[in-house]
Length: 291
Length: 252
Image (cartoon, rainbow over all chains, first blue to last red; front, side, top):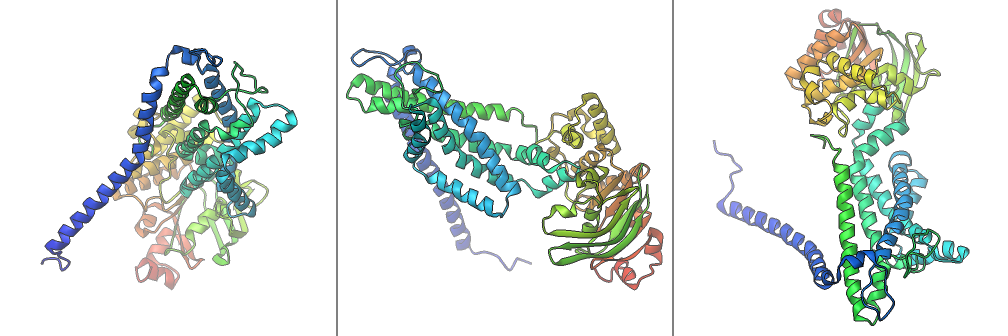
């Protein structure tokens, strides 16, 4: 006997059209999202690639009027700042996320922390710079790489905390029970089982936070300040790629404009490279069939 | 060797819901004891009270006395220590997905800070052999994730993982209910072999399974232990009308 739910021809045609429509909308949205990325990168290549040479990576900036010069100190400076920032932001961010997901559930303290993290995420980066300026730079009476690193680190925390929390909450309850049932202490189960199971997502959160602050200029204006000379000292002003780009792009000199374009290209490339590197390293240990 | 468990006046709650009422029974050493009853009758809660997993739920409460050999389970001994001595296998296979087969079996010892490689190698091999899984996985112990195995293999992996910490009692909460008949048969064979070394308590929905594997059977209904006797007596000549109704399929 034929099914009583037999559909008409029109039914089937309209269903097909709806299906095609939904798929094309999804493809269209993807294109709209990635187009600016490709356009920006292409434009940077067009404007900046011609100024890229070995000197760009080995020299420090030349005084106004002299040709050439590079951003070696800014590249190293950015690495130092991001190193300090990650050293502060990643452990604190992950620890706070663990607290929210595993220990503070529904508690008053957890709600306060969650709210604070969300507000912190929305604080304009220039405000972060001013805050660190008054908290660290003013008492010390000088700009420093440390102050810049702290500003970046604090900006990383909310993203890392919230992703860590979300990822830990997605770890199935049965996995935690398995660990507890084996007589594993709770703290050990949280670190070695829950966090490990959630680690791909947690790493993504750290990378998002890293990539976001890597391009920040505003929080560094009053903290790291920038430096035309070689310096990797933590208690001295330090150069950073975004700062250098900002200064050069605002200058009236064509030579500096070209260097600013090259700097922007290098900054984006370095972010892409470091994120891919972390992904590669962390994916090497993944086992066959692990989900 | 396994030890017996003596339960006296055990009561358990989830919030205000009184799920176990005055349970008294003796689980003999080195035998398999089956607990049957309809869904929600409290049999899972009961086994979770034996290794203090019940209290991991923040709204759960328990009173009464549980004695395992010389140890008072709700006495001074920490719940972590108790759970090391009373292993548990859950209804759904729950291997650690990020760990290899080897690491899954070794996890109970490793996560308690035990790291001697040679001993771990031995324990992993012995546990997987005891769980009748060794031949199927020995070639890719460290290459494959525990989650890549089939459902039945995963459950035997979880049994191996529980055996690796060398417990005295093994609790199995419907270990075969998510498995196909072939895998179920393997688990039942396993229970037969494990009885010589461990005391086994198995919760099951499947009455034939209880009849096949257990020396003693308890029938739970609405949070009460209605009847507890030898499996033979329960299935051939039950003392309580409700037990008879249940095993003959008149309800539940």
